[in-house]
Amino acid sequence: MVLLKKNIFALTVFLLFAVTGCRGNIPVYHISEDIDFSFYKKVAVLPLDNLTNDKYAGEIVRQVVISELLASGLVDVVLPGDVKSAFNNLGIKSVSSLNSNQIRALGKSLKVEALILGVVEEYGEAKMGNVSAPQVTISLMMADAGSGSIVWSITQTRGGASFWARHFGARHETISETVLMLVRESIRTLVEY
Amino acid sequence: MSKTEKRGKQRRLYRSLPVFCLLIFFISGCSNGMKQYVRPNFDFSAVRTVAVLPLENFTSDKYAGGKIRSKVIIELLSRGIDVIEPGEIIMTLRELKVRSIDSIRTEDIQEMGRMLDAEAVIKGSVEAFGISKGITVSYPEVSIDLTLIDTASGNIIWSVWHTSGGASFWTRHFGTEGMTLDNTSAKVVKEIFDTIY
Image 1 (cartoon, one colour):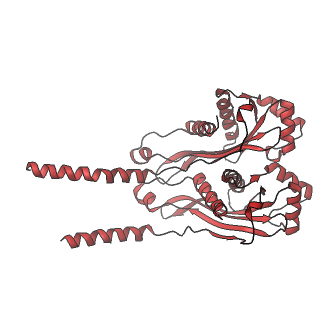
Image 2: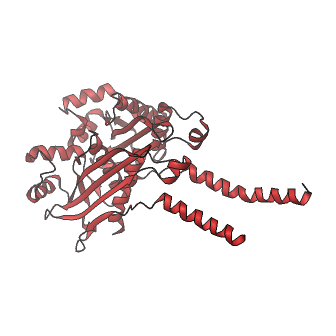
Protein backbone atom coordinates (compact mmCIF):
# COMPACT_ATOMS: atom_id res chain seq x y z
CA MET A 1 0.00 0.00 0.00
CA VAL A 2 2.85 2.35 0.97
CA LEU A 3 4.64 1.45 -2.26
CA LEU A 4 1.49 2.20 -4.26
CA LYS A 5 1.10 5.58 -2.53
CA LYS A 6 4.73 6.44 -3.33
CA ASN A 7 4.24 5.45 -6.95
CA ILE A 8 1.11 7.57 -7.26
CA PHE A 9 3.01 10.55 -5.86
CA ALA A 10 5.87 10.05 -8.32
CA LEU A 11 3.40 9.65 -11.17
CA THR A 12 1.61 12.89 -10.19
CA VAL A 13 4.90 14.80 -10.10
CA PHE A 14 5.87 13.35 -13.48
CA LEU A 15 2.46 14.24 -14.93
CA LEU A 16 2.74 17.80 -13.62
CA PHE A 17 6.10 18.19 -15.33
CA ALA A 18 4.76 16.72 -18.54
CA VAL A 19 1.69 18.98 -18.54
CA THR A 20 3.72 22.05 -17.59
CA GLY A 21 6.11 21.48 -20.44
CA CYS A 22 9.53 22.98 -20.51
CA ARG A 23 9.71 26.09 -22.62
CA GLY A 24 13.13 26.79 -24.00
CA ASN A 25 14.01 30.31 -22.90
CA ILE A 26 17.64 30.07 -23.78
CA PRO A 27 18.84 33.20 -25.56
CA VAL A 28 20.60 32.79 -28.88
CA TYR A 29 23.54 35.15 -28.81
CA HIS A 30 26.95 35.87 -30.26
CA ILE A 31 29.84 37.83 -28.78
CA SER A 32 33.06 38.54 -30.62
CA GLU A 33 35.66 36.91 -28.42
CA ASP A 34 38.55 39.10 -29.53
CA ILE A 35 36.83 42.31 -28.41
CA ASP A 36 37.54 44.09 -25.13
CA PHE A 37 34.12 45.36 -24.05
CA SER A 38 35.58 47.69 -21.44
CA PHE A 39 36.63 49.86 -24.39
CA TYR A 40 32.98 50.82 -24.97
CA LYS A 41 32.20 53.77 -22.73
CA LYS A 42 29.42 55.50 -24.63
CA VAL A 43 26.86 54.02 -27.02
CA ALA A 44 23.92 55.27 -29.07
CA VAL A 45 20.72 53.24 -29.17
CA LEU A 46 19.25 53.66 -32.65
CA PRO A 47 15.49 53.46 -33.31
CA LEU A 48 14.51 49.78 -33.42
CA ASP A 49 12.85 48.31 -36.49
CA ASN A 50 9.25 47.55 -35.67
CA LEU A 51 7.85 44.43 -37.32
CA THR A 52 4.70 44.32 -35.19
CA ASN A 53 1.23 45.77 -35.47
CA ASP A 54 1.78 47.97 -32.43
CA LYS A 55 3.04 51.27 -33.81
CA TYR A 56 4.91 52.17 -30.61
CA ALA A 57 6.54 48.76 -29.96
CA GLY A 58 9.91 49.85 -31.36
CA GLU A 59 10.06 52.99 -29.24
CA ILE A 60 8.84 51.24 -26.09
CA VAL A 61 11.53 48.56 -26.32
CA ARG A 62 14.14 51.20 -27.22
CA GLN A 63 13.41 53.17 -24.03
CA VAL A 64 13.76 50.01 -21.93
CA VAL A 65 17.06 49.18 -23.67
CA ILE A 66 18.41 52.70 -22.92
CA SER A 67 17.28 52.53 -19.31
CA GLU A 68 18.65 49.02 -18.72
CA LEU A 69 21.98 49.81 -20.39
CA LEU A 70 22.38 52.80 -18.09
CA ALA A 71 21.23 50.83 -15.04
CA SER A 72 23.71 48.05 -15.81
CA GLY A 73 26.51 50.59 -15.32
CA LEU A 74 28.26 49.27 -18.43
CA VAL A 75 28.02 52.30 -20.66
CA ASP A 76 26.77 55.84 -21.00
CA VAL A 77 24.03 56.43 -23.57
CA VAL A 78 23.49 59.46 -25.81
CA LEU A 79 20.10 61.16 -25.93
CA PRO A 80 17.67 59.90 -28.61
CA GLY A 81 17.34 63.50 -29.86
CA ASP A 82 21.07 63.59 -30.65
CA VAL A 83 20.67 60.34 -32.61
CA LYS A 84 17.77 61.82 -34.61
CA SER A 85 19.79 64.95 -35.33
CA ALA A 86 22.77 62.85 -36.53
CA PHE A 87 20.43 60.85 -38.79
CA ASN A 88 19.14 64.09 -40.34
CA ASN A 89 22.63 65.55 -40.77
CA LEU A 90 23.92 62.38 -42.47
CA GLY A 91 20.78 61.99 -44.58
CA ILE A 92 20.03 58.51 -43.20
CA LYS A 93 16.37 57.67 -43.64
CA SER A 94 16.07 54.04 -42.57
CA VAL A 95 17.77 52.05 -39.82
CA SER A 96 17.22 48.73 -41.55
CA SER A 97 19.40 49.73 -44.50
CA LEU A 98 22.45 50.95 -42.54
CA ASN A 99 25.80 49.94 -44.01
CA SER A 100 29.17 49.86 -42.25
CA ASN A 101 30.19 53.25 -43.69
CA GLN A 102 27.06 54.84 -42.23
CA ILE A 103 27.68 53.10 -38.89
CA ARG A 104 31.18 54.58 -38.81
CA ALA A 105 29.87 58.02 -39.78
CA LEU A 106 27.18 57.87 -37.07
CA GLY A 107 29.76 56.83 -34.48
CA LYS A 108 31.99 59.75 -35.44
CA SER A 109 29.13 62.25 -35.43
CA LEU A 110 27.75 61.08 -32.07
CA LYS A 111 31.21 60.55 -30.52
CA VAL A 112 30.32 57.03 -29.42
CA GLU A 113 32.27 53.77 -29.51
CA ALA A 114 29.32 51.57 -30.46
CA LEU A 115 25.78 51.62 -31.80
CA ILE A 116 22.92 49.43 -30.65
CA LEU A 117 20.53 48.35 -33.39
CA GLY A 118 17.65 45.95 -33.30
CA VAL A 119 14.27 44.64 -34.30
CA VAL A 120 11.04 44.07 -32.40
CA GLU A 121 9.52 40.99 -34.00
CA GLU A 122 6.62 40.28 -31.67
CA TYR A 123 4.86 42.54 -29.22
CA GLY A 124 1.41 41.73 -28.00
CA GLU A 125 -0.92 39.06 -26.75
CA ALA A 126 -0.38 35.49 -27.88
CA LYS A 127 -3.35 33.17 -27.69
CA MET A 128 -2.76 29.69 -26.27
CA GLY A 129 -5.93 27.63 -26.22
CA ASN A 130 -8.53 29.70 -24.46
CA VAL A 131 -6.09 32.01 -22.67
CA SER A 132 -3.97 34.83 -23.98
CA ALA A 133 -0.79 36.21 -22.46
CA PRO A 134 1.85 38.77 -23.46
CA GLN A 135 4.56 37.63 -25.82
CA VAL A 136 7.57 39.65 -26.98
CA THR A 137 10.45 38.77 -29.31
CA ILE A 138 13.40 41.06 -29.89
CA SER A 139 16.76 40.98 -31.62
CA LEU A 140 19.53 43.34 -30.56
CA MET A 141 22.93 43.99 -32.08
CA MET A 142 25.92 46.06 -31.10
CA ALA A 143 28.03 47.47 -33.91
CA ASP A 144 31.54 48.75 -33.34
CA ALA A 145 31.59 52.38 -34.49
CA GLY A 146 35.24 52.16 -35.51
CA SER A 147 35.05 49.14 -37.81
CA GLY A 148 31.32 49.01 -38.52
CA SER A 149 31.21 45.30 -37.64
CA ILE A 150 28.75 43.53 -35.34
CA VAL A 151 30.37 42.57 -32.04
CA TRP A 152 27.33 41.31 -30.11
CA SER A 153 23.94 40.06 -31.17
CA ILE A 154 21.09 38.35 -29.40
CA THR A 155 17.59 37.07 -30.18
CA GLN A 156 15.21 36.46 -27.33
CA THR A 157 11.57 35.67 -26.87
CA ARG A 158 9.52 35.64 -23.69
CA GLY A 159 5.91 35.33 -22.75
CA GLY A 160 2.94 33.08 -22.68
CA ALA A 161 0.92 31.92 -19.71
CA SER A 162 2.61 29.46 -17.40
CA PHE A 163 1.05 26.18 -16.27
CA TRP A 164 0.25 27.73 -12.90
CA ALA A 165 -1.33 30.80 -14.47
CA ARG A 166 -3.42 28.70 -16.85
CA HIS A 167 -4.67 26.16 -14.32
CA PHE A 168 -4.38 27.71 -10.87
CA GLY A 169 -4.81 31.41 -11.57
CA ALA A 170 -1.22 32.32 -10.64
CA ARG A 171 -0.10 35.82 -11.51
CA HIS A 172 1.27 36.18 -15.03
CA GLU A 173 3.54 38.95 -16.27
CA THR A 174 2.17 42.14 -17.76
CA ILE A 175 3.52 43.08 -21.20
CA SER A 176 5.72 45.77 -19.62
CA GLU A 177 7.25 43.22 -17.25
CA THR A 178 7.82 40.84 -20.16
CA VAL A 179 9.70 43.53 -22.09
CA LEU A 180 11.71 44.53 -19.04
CA MET A 181 12.79 40.97 -18.23
CA LEU A 182 13.58 40.25 -21.87
CA VAL A 183 15.81 43.31 -22.24
CA ARG A 184 17.40 42.72 -18.82
CA GLU A 185 18.26 39.11 -19.72
CA SER A 186 19.69 40.23 -23.07
CA ILE A 187 21.92 42.87 -21.49
CA ARG A 188 22.98 40.40 -18.80
CA THR A 189 24.81 38.41 -21.50
CA LEU A 190 26.98 41.50 -22.05
CA VAL A 191 27.46 42.17 -18.34
CA GLU A 192 28.47 38.59 -17.64
CA TYR A 193 30.97 38.55 -20.50
CA MET B 1 -13.64 10.22 17.56
CA SER B 2 -11.13 9.61 20.34
CA LYS B 3 -8.84 12.28 21.76
CA THR B 4 -5.73 10.73 20.15
CA GLU B 5 -7.40 10.67 16.74
CA LYS B 6 -8.41 14.32 17.15
CA ARG B 7 -4.88 15.32 18.10
CA GLY B 8 -3.48 13.38 15.13
CA LYS B 9 -5.85 15.20 12.77
CA GLN B 10 -4.89 18.56 14.24
CA ARG B 11 -1.21 17.75 13.90
CA ARG B 12 -1.67 16.81 10.25
CA LEU B 13 -3.53 20.10 9.68
CA TYR B 14 -0.72 22.11 11.27
CA ARG B 15 1.83 20.24 9.19
CA SER B 16 0.02 21.08 5.96
CA LEU B 17 -0.16 24.78 6.88
CA PRO B 18 3.38 25.72 5.68
CA VAL B 19 2.75 23.89 2.39
CA PHE B 20 -0.50 25.83 1.95
CA CYS B 21 1.25 29.15 2.73
CA LEU B 22 4.02 28.31 0.26
CA LEU B 23 1.44 27.51 -2.39
CA ILE B 24 -0.36 30.83 -1.81
CA PHE B 25 2.96 32.67 -2.02
CA PHE B 26 3.83 30.81 -5.21
CA ILE B 27 0.48 31.47 -6.83
CA SER B 28 0.56 35.14 -5.77
CA GLY B 29 3.74 35.70 -7.74
CA CYS B 30 6.19 38.47 -7.18
CA SER B 31 6.88 41.55 -9.27
CA ASN B 32 10.17 42.58 -10.90
CA GLY B 33 12.57 44.85 -9.07
CA MET B 34 13.25 48.37 -10.28
CA LYS B 35 16.76 49.12 -11.47
CA GLN B 36 18.02 52.66 -11.87
CA TYR B 37 21.09 54.53 -13.01
CA VAL B 38 22.62 57.21 -10.82
CA ARG B 39 25.69 59.05 -12.09
CA PRO B 40 28.48 58.42 -9.61
CA ASN B 41 29.73 61.38 -7.55
CA PHE B 42 26.89 63.68 -8.61
CA ASP B 43 25.55 65.94 -5.89
CA PHE B 44 21.77 65.71 -6.16
CA SER B 45 21.26 68.27 -3.40
CA ALA B 46 22.53 70.89 -5.87
CA VAL B 47 19.45 70.31 -8.02
CA ARG B 48 16.92 72.79 -6.66
CA THR B 49 14.96 73.73 -9.79
CA VAL B 50 13.84 71.26 -12.42
CA ALA B 51 12.06 71.66 -15.76
CA VAL B 52 9.75 68.74 -16.54
CA LEU B 53 9.44 68.40 -20.32
CA PRO B 54 6.22 67.07 -21.87
CA LEU B 55 6.43 63.28 -21.75
CA GLU B 56 6.37 61.22 -24.93
CA ASN B 57 3.25 59.13 -25.11
CA PHE B 58 3.44 55.58 -26.50
CA THR B 59 -0.05 54.59 -25.38
CA SER B 60 -3.49 54.71 -26.94
CA ASP B 61 -4.66 57.22 -24.30
CA LYS B 62 -3.81 60.55 -25.88
CA TYR B 63 -3.73 62.32 -22.51
CA ALA B 64 -1.53 59.77 -20.71
CA GLY B 65 1.60 61.92 -21.09
CA GLY B 66 -0.11 64.96 -19.58
CA LYS B 67 -1.60 62.95 -16.72
CA ILE B 68 1.71 61.42 -15.70
CA ARG B 69 3.56 64.70 -16.17
CA SER B 70 1.26 66.46 -13.68
CA LYS B 71 1.84 63.64 -11.17
CA VAL B 72 5.61 63.99 -11.64
CA ILE B 73 5.38 67.76 -11.04
CA ILE B 74 3.26 67.31 -7.89
CA GLU B 75 5.62 64.62 -6.58
CA LEU B 76 8.67 66.87 -7.11
CA LEU B 77 6.99 69.85 -5.46
CA SER B 78 5.95 67.71 -2.48
CA ARG B 79 9.61 66.75 -2.03
CA GLY B 80 10.77 70.38 -1.93
CA ILE B 81 12.06 70.64 -5.51
CA ASP B 82 11.10 73.77 -7.47
CA VAL B 83 9.47 73.08 -10.81
CA ILE B 84 9.37 75.45 -13.80
CA GLU B 85 5.88 76.41 -15.01
CA PRO B 86 4.82 74.15 -17.93
CA GLY B 87 3.86 77.26 -19.96
CA GLU B 88 7.40 78.64 -19.63
CA ILE B 89 8.75 75.33 -20.95
CA ILE B 90 6.49 75.44 -24.00
CA MET B 91 7.63 79.00 -24.76
CA THR B 92 11.30 78.04 -24.42
CA LEU B 93 10.85 75.00 -26.67
CA ARG B 94 9.30 77.30 -29.30
CA GLU B 95 12.16 79.77 -29.00
CA LEU B 96 14.66 76.93 -29.44
CA LYS B 97 12.64 75.70 -32.45
CA VAL B 98 12.24 72.22 -30.94
CA ARG B 99 9.30 70.73 -32.82
CA SER B 100 8.99 67.45 -30.95
CA ILE B 101 10.32 66.15 -27.66
CA ASP B 102 11.96 63.13 -29.29
CA SER B 103 14.20 65.46 -31.29
CA ILE B 104 15.54 67.46 -28.34
CA ARG B 105 19.34 67.51 -28.39
CA THR B 106 21.89 67.85 -25.59
CA GLU B 107 22.69 71.41 -26.65
CA ASP B 108 18.95 72.32 -26.53
CA ILE B 109 18.82 71.02 -22.96
CA GLN B 110 21.87 73.04 -21.97
CA GLU B 111 20.32 76.14 -23.56
CA MET B 112 17.01 75.47 -21.79
CA GLY B 113 18.84 75.29 -18.47
CA ARG B 114 20.35 78.72 -19.08
CA MET B 115 17.07 80.28 -20.27
CA LEU B 116 14.92 78.82 -17.49
CA ASP B 117 17.56 78.93 -14.78
CA ALA B 118 17.02 75.24 -14.04
CA GLU B 119 19.78 72.92 -12.83
CA ALA B 120 18.20 69.85 -14.42
CA VAL B 121 15.63 68.77 -16.97
CA ILE B 122 13.37 65.73 -16.69
CA LYS B 123 12.62 63.95 -19.93
CA GLY B 124 10.66 60.75 -20.27
CA SER B 125 7.92 58.70 -21.80
CA VAL B 126 4.82 56.74 -20.89
CA GLU B 127 4.97 53.20 -22.28
CA ALA B 128 1.78 51.79 -20.79
CA PHE B 129 -1.27 53.50 -19.33
CA GLY B 130 -4.53 51.64 -19.36
CA ILE B 131 -6.54 48.64 -18.36
CA SER B 132 -5.01 45.39 -19.59
CA LYS B 133 -6.83 42.11 -19.87
CA GLY B 134 -5.48 39.20 -17.85
CA ILE B 135 -6.49 35.54 -18.02
CA THR B 136 -9.39 35.94 -15.62
CA VAL B 137 -9.50 39.62 -14.66
CA SER B 138 -8.61 43.04 -16.02
CA TYR B 139 -6.06 45.22 -14.26
CA PRO B 140 -4.47 48.66 -14.57
CA GLU B 141 -0.98 48.79 -16.06
CA VAL B 142 1.32 51.82 -15.99
CA SER B 143 4.92 51.96 -17.22
CA ILE B 144 7.04 55.09 -17.23
CA ASP B 145 10.62 55.99 -17.93
CA LEU B 146 12.21 59.16 -16.62
CA THR B 147 15.64 60.64 -17.23
CA LEU B 148 17.17 63.52 -15.30
CA ILE B 149 19.68 65.52 -17.31
CA ASP B 150 22.16 67.97 -15.84
CA THR B 151 21.81 71.22 -17.78
CA ALA B 152 25.39 72.32 -17.09
CA SER B 153 27.09 69.28 -18.63
CA GLY B 154 24.23 67.76 -20.67
CA ASN B 155 24.92 64.40 -18.98
CA ILE B 156 22.25 61.95 -17.90
CA ILE B 157 22.50 61.91 -14.11
CA TRP B 158 19.60 59.62 -13.25
CA SER B 159 17.50 57.26 -15.27
CA VAL B 160 14.78 54.86 -14.27
CA TRP B 161 12.16 52.68 -15.95
CA HIS B 162 9.36 51.44 -13.75
CA THR B 163 6.15 49.53 -14.19
CA SER B 164 3.26 48.60 -11.99
CA GLY B 165 0.16 46.58 -12.60
CA GLY B 166 -1.23 43.12 -12.71
CA ALA B 167 -4.05 41.78 -10.62
CA SER B 168 -3.26 40.94 -7.01
CA PHE B 169 -3.81 37.51 -5.49
CA TRP B 170 -6.97 38.71 -3.70
CA THR B 171 -8.44 40.26 -6.86
CA ARG B 172 -7.73 37.17 -8.95
CA HIS B 173 -9.09 34.63 -6.51
CA PHE B 174 -11.56 36.45 -4.29
CA GLY B 175 -12.69 39.30 -6.53
CA THR B 176 -11.61 42.07 -4.15
CA GLU B 177 -11.41 45.57 -5.55
CA GLY B 178 -8.02 46.25 -7.12
CA MET B 179 -6.21 49.55 -7.58
CA THR B 180 -7.59 52.12 -9.99
CA LEU B 181 -5.56 53.37 -12.95
CA ASP B 182 -5.04 56.69 -11.19
CA ASN B 183 -3.83 54.98 -7.99
CA THR B 184 -1.46 52.80 -10.00
CA SER B 185 0.06 55.75 -11.85
CA ALA B 186 0.47 57.70 -8.58
CA LYS B 187 2.15 54.62 -7.04
CA VAL B 188 4.58 54.28 -9.96
CA VAL B 189 5.57 57.97 -9.82
CA LYS B 190 5.97 57.86 -6.04
CA GLU B 191 8.11 54.71 -6.13
CA ILE B 192 10.29 56.24 -8.84
CA PHE B 193 11.08 59.34 -6.76
CA ASP B 194 11.48 57.32 -3.57
CA THR B 195 14.66 55.94 -5.12
CA ILE B 196 16.31 59.34 -5.38
CA TYR B 197 14.75 61.90 -2.98
